[in-house]
Length: 333
Figure (cartoon, rainbow, N blue to C red):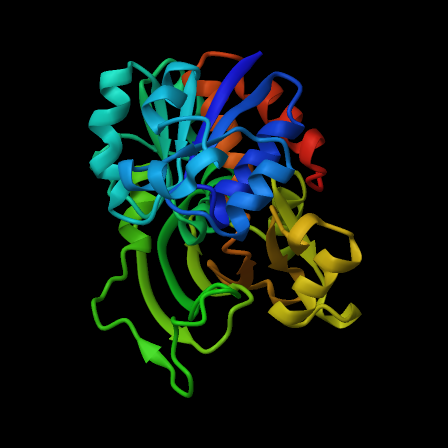
């Protein structure tokens, strides 16, 4: 049983703690917060040992804290760094000094670990490494839909427009109120980031932010190098891991209805760990494939993190890890 620390019990961290707790071969050694708030209370109520992420936090948390993050790392085999963007890179020395394996999130640069991870693409390359970076929610979604096509048909140029949520549901201080905000840096970071995981794949990406909190939406158009029909493409995705095909004609025609599906499935926090592909959007014209997909930004990276931990700690092969993770969480296969 491997002991896993979660440094940062926020949007991703609390989901990862619950995901670790659900696995048969790992347990939560502890989680960290910087101050007392409802999430700190939640951690204690869930039975997770609470530690202070900072020296100031140790004083602020008072009797709630079991100790410092340094003390937590001593008791752990691996740490998920779920701290705010930019803090993870600053924490790298802390983990290296502790001699502990680390999994970083996609808000950190590729160089923080020197290796960017997606379970279906490069699990074997992660085995035994000291660190890995699980790519962002949007990049994870693109890897899940594109890599099976690369393997089955070959893929030439890819163009994607990302319609991004302005902020997460609780982030009241973020996002446009009555505006659509283009990301004027072209390409957006997502296309180059995909190439960090799938070398040689040429993805041109543009992004806009819109005033919603629910999900991201991708409009994808790509060139298939081998001839394929619409049904051929759908068949490939049917067996791809963590991909869920949905039908707009049956009432799932928006990100709001996707989230309602998560609620109706009684998912915790209405999480959708799967990439949602609208199968009725899938169109093949000559060698050009186009489709829409939806990404739940708060949860899609959760199973990838669990698999990254197993790879770094040499706990299992890719097939066993993916199956175990998905079975424990209830991911649709």
